[in-house]
Image (cartoon, rainbow, N blue to C red; front, side, top):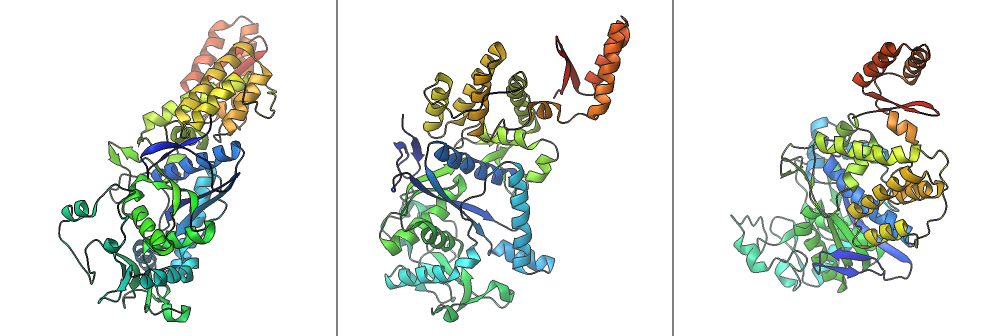
Length: 464
């Protein structure tokens, strides 16, 4: 079975093959970086981390570009509030993002362009659009995109121009010829700091001092890094309209070529049935979540739901994820030396895993295969099956830790103290003081430590 991917553009699952044999080029809209990332942002980056991991597992070379928006109204406002430069703020927040997502095992992209490094390319693209009659200078000094002059507008979101007009409340033109038009170049304001302004004349263009609009950034960065047409364009479902729709209008209006062959969007993280967002104030930063749960549990929580499905966030769901992940590590703990070899994709468990992932990166079904495989490891203690479990887990960035360490993570007592109590219990059992032995076991259980007796001795793990 070959890989199939759900394409938002066609609203169907389609067979995937890259434009260049053996090489996948993928662009994902990354963070607007003015604050710490929350778990909704992690969900987006995790979704495409899994995509690139599976593409690599399938034998493709992947050029993965995930941009950073480092100039924006919110960024300017936050920098001014803190009394620091825009660059100082964004450098700080980028470092924090890398630290947080690194803990979750999210691999870095091949390229991570910053918008402020591509202003010349953005201005060139705006000039192309102006020469084709798709961009115009407004009375306010902005340069806008003339939406009605691009025939394909609405093809990604499925929105017609008439529907968009009907959905308007109060039309605020701000110098626009049409309320649907959007800004490509924002004229500088006196109130804005100097580091929020670029002199277009110094870069060979006649648009005055200002800064790029949000949408033009991704058009310029994606095409500069990957070419006029590439394989996959991704991002959160909230970017489908207007951001991605506007990217298509800009890029295809300038080049006359399709921007991306597959458009891939991940679902929201919800809290109490509402989208997690900073504007609603119902968000939890990655750091807040990692203060309560280990990183692999958070990763597993994000992965085991299909990337296009909305994901409900709660402590209950994370506790359940931790308990489920322990089942997999418990199986690996039974086999101290699993045989890790190249995956034989014809092996029944591996074939099922591959079939699941090849159907639009079907992680729920792939995770179910891991649990079935863990059941067999529990029964057989097979080193080969344990090795396969670990190798398949690696395709998702899971099960690469020390099983004992994972199972004992979160203990309220240190390992030495628990070991001493286990030794004391063993001595009590040897002298037939079963009341003391049982008391030690119960005291440890009250502190979240469960003891497991076997012919080879006593081990322990943390219970949720």
